[in-house]
Image 1 (cartoon, one colour):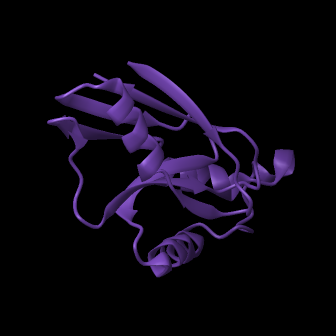
Image 2 (tube, rainbow, N blue to C red):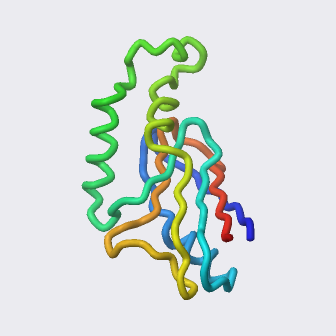
Length: 133
């Protein structure tokens, strides 16, 4: 089963919890066992599995990435549209995750959440693809 949904982002960089949306898709699919693949088809965004209960994790994560890949790092791509750092961060973070599905439920840790990472916002209609196999 293949599903797409869209979100809008509101900041240049932000992390948005998608766990509820993905769980709704899984519940509506009615599948019991398999894998759930979540993919973000954007060159300046990514997806992670991490804690969402403490909002400081999101802030810390973005701050750590900024130390590794500063916005103004003299990237050659910045001559085109000024978002070289966003492309690099996206590549480091990755564009997909795959999770087990057991007894109709996502198998994730107690503190884990599925989170969209925006590195070049704000943007409208960021696509998230969910495929259940």
